[in-house]
Image 1 (cartoon, rainbow, N blue to C red):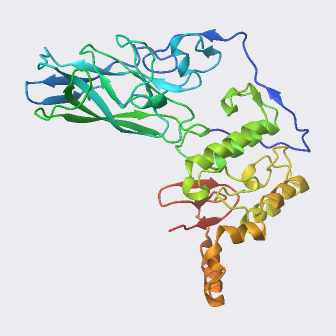
Image 2 (image 1 turned 180 degrees about the vertical axis):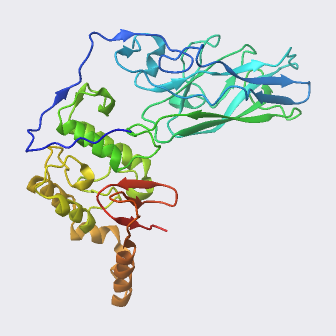
Amino acid sequence: MVKKQSVFGVAMMMTVTIASTGMAEFVIPQMGGGTIGQGLAPMKHADISFDGTSIGVHVDTSVGVPALRALEEPYEFDPQQPWGVLSDKAYNFQYGWNSSGFLSMPADGWIWIEQLSSSDGLEIYQRPPATPAYDPIFGTGGSGTRWRWSLSMTHNVYAIENPLQRELSAAYRVYIGDDVTGEPLPQYNSAEVTLTFAASVWGDFDDNGMLGCEDIDALIGAIAAGESDSSFDMNRDGMLNLDDRDAWLRQAGLAFPELTGGEPISLGDANLDGMVDDIDFAAWNSSKFSSVAEWCRGDFNADGVVDVRDYDIWNAGRPTPAAIQNAVPEVIHAPCWLLVVTLVRRRSAIVRQPDGRGSDRYLEVTGSRRYRDRSLPIVRDLD
């Protein structure tokens, strides 16, 4: 659990350079991602068989779900090496395509693997014996979705930058296709398989699988306190400042497109519900002129105090009447009573409700996701 930092007194905003132990240390990719080698992250094979008529695929269940991991300081990948494509990405290559026995190919046919779907942002690069090593495959970088397997054990690498979810997957069809073109040969039966991965959501500092108040409050506290913890360096520029706040807001906007349309969470949106409104003002108002370094209580500029500057940020973030009108043009010609009902219904969607656990409160954002908010006893039902 990441502890929030409270800064007493008016803090002077400053840019903090992340402490470094020296020059970056170049390493080579490890099977388990990050610096986790094969000893701690064993191979997990997808064994392929062919009986002359049908393809079969069996995934080893004795090995757990592979985890995508990024390098930590001071380790880096040499950008001049083929594996430089993995820089700033969480990765893993425990999964391997493997023969379950002797494979005899039909005339003019070969085993091909086609990617049917994958989690957003998941990238795949081939590894030896496939060549060229670390070339993109399975749709990554505009590559084709079909890949001709060499019939030798091959551990391709899976990678993602700034994961938005804890569980990722890629689905495949393994089939007999034309040896040259990869077009499926209809006289043979194919098999489908899904490979799954675990990942830590980027910006989820308490690692509970959600981006919420505890996470951005921890980030705001670190900036206000002048910390140099690289785990908060959201934009990976070696500094801790408001750019990292903005990067976190962009990440949260991407994580919850149903609230933001994929746009960043707006400055002044204290409760992270995708709107800058009176509820956010109430958060600021309840903490005004106090030494609080928490976004969800109104410290939007991370200076350690809730004051007029934060109010100005909230006020600037409110939608203008013109923006509201453009956002809902259908109400322009609606009867007045319909507009009134709409406004009343909107107001009724906000319910104040204590949760019976002291100061902790939760803000409901979907049927399955919650933002934790330690200051606002609000539940917002979007159903």
